[in-house]
Image (cartoon, rainbow, N blue to C red; front, top):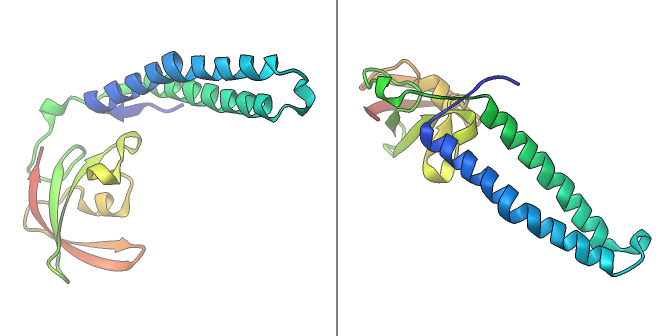
Length: 156
């Protein structure tokens, strides 16, 4: 698997998620399997089948998280500038057409979360903003068509 770059915050979230899955979810699944097995015939036991399926999905998620964490490289946030848009910058943009302003933080794919205003560096908007400066007008091809944005502010 490829190296995954992430912030210290993103790394800590992945570690907390892994700990939760291993220390809370896994024992719950094992308990559910034991309870279902105690109910008798496993060949017609839907509860047992569901618990085993849940266990399989949980173990796959744990394995995936362990791989991400093992290949993680934490980004040195102190080396990030605000002269031009780059990874981990908080960027305020204004839609030229309707003057609506939006602020996004450009993050790695593993940390993207639109509800938190964090967009992946691989999105069309982030790709279009990278390398540009405050005051630049950027043209971004989005699924809704070509849109023009002015970069209003770049911060950390």
